[in-house]
Length: 123
Image 1 (cartoon, rainbow, N blue to C red):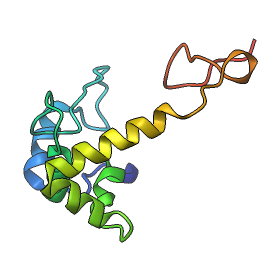
Image 2: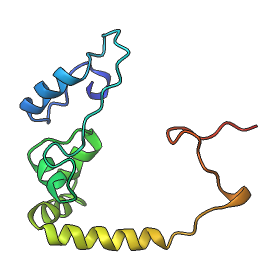
Image 3: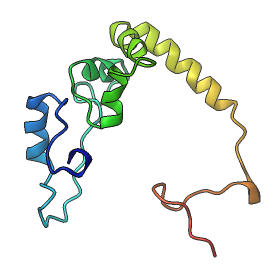
Image 4: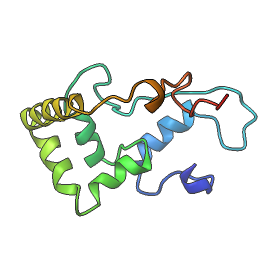
């Protein structure tokens, strides 16, 4: 449901659109089903750079992901990650180390969400 239009993202590969239509109910459907799909449509259970390769093929599931291939500040990164698995692995490792250096908020300065999708209700 691209931007609430009831249609698919026009930049998305038509074959992927057809596949997703078979998995996901239409916006007007009364289905209570909550379908899920992998963001990496190729090697979902492998740790590799396929996600970036899929973006280059217009197989981005989320609009924000697909926009990485067209934004001037990120297009080169996507190209680099897609074309070189070693670059991807090294960049990912560096990012994890960087995240490990983030100071975790504890006690009254932070909170563990009971549902990761929403902020805990105040009591």
